[in-house]
Image (cartoon, rainbow, N blue to C red; front, side):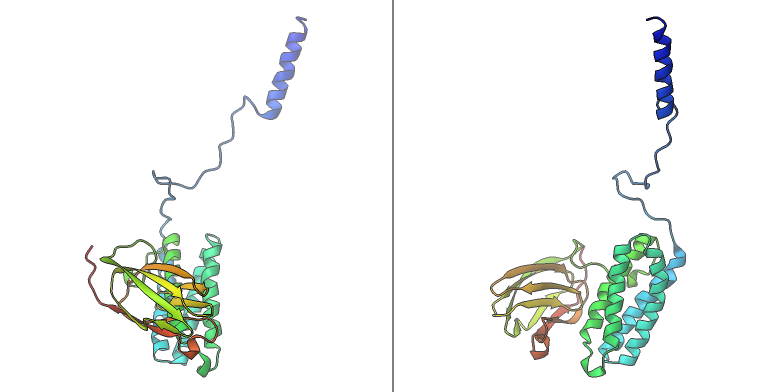
Length: 263
């Protein structure tokens, strides 16, 4: 029995060495640096990406301006300029957030499709909507990649909780084929909840063109709400984009009066 004890001890030692127990453990893989709150820390600054980001955002603004003048040649030129700058950004964004990169690329494809149409079939409102949507996504991408961009080029998301002066609820009725009220007036920096009811016999949508947000596929008798802060002053379209509805007059206006942000 006394002779077995050293043998058992040697056997256990060999087993421990084989499994790595009792030895110095390998260091665990490093985790992403986090802030005290547990959030990912700010990315390393990438000022070399500022120029392509700003060029892409500027091209979107100028594309939209050309679209308002129904200048298709000007729109095409700016879409090409956007494409060129976006190609540089995409290479950097793909490894970091492939989903966000795909959303932006999908928007770019929408622009490609629209500018390829004959002049008489171009949907000019698409350029305003895509300019805002893509600007918003690019602004997010620039922040993720640590690329500082000019404040006037940053697109904020109007549906998130951002500073506003006051709140309003506005009832909107959809019928076959009208939007009521046809003209909606509200002050800038107001948090608006649109209460949208479909009183028609067909499925409808309620889209706020410039803000690139919408209530989709509203069934007859159904009510849905859409809340956003109206950030930009001006006159913008409201519309239903169920095929054929816009073409027969299902659109209106959102008039946002200029106002200073109080807080």
